[in-house]
Length: 206
Image (cartoon, rainbow, N blue to C red; front, side, top):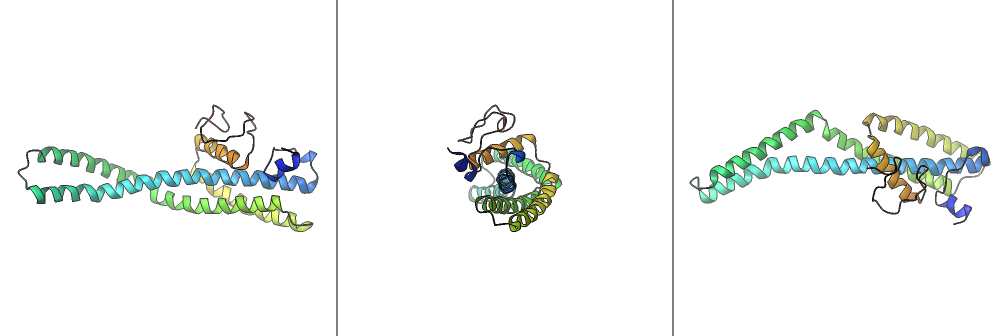
């Protein structure tokens, strides 16, 4: 791959002191596009996790009593295995109640709503940064548009950092972003091609 083709695909990080001003800004755009994509991926993963847990809580809270009621109405209360069924259902409902209480205390619904907002915002930032890097405007317009993007990106990061992303989530996001942009990890030097984690402490171990 030539130097030009590497840059067009979001190539290797280069020192800004080694680049002309416009090239430095384009490289900054590629880097920021990568980070925004990685953040979006992390919140997409959180979104899927929260959706599954909340769906299970809602479904089990309805399904278990319905199954119990339907069984009793169909076979009566003299079933030999009814006590066992009631015991199992009671345990499951107890677990459902604990999880429901925990989800309320941990603000799972609010956290899920935030993931939708963050995913949309970071996807937009990543796309716009990539467009700026790929086809930069001429003259001062490039610098002005990049400055607007920096302000928006900074505001988004200030919000996202309050969600307490774990180091494991950050490594998973970096792995996904490097894979998306065809970039080599700055630590291990490997370009991820699959979602299988490596032993790298920057883009693996998740």
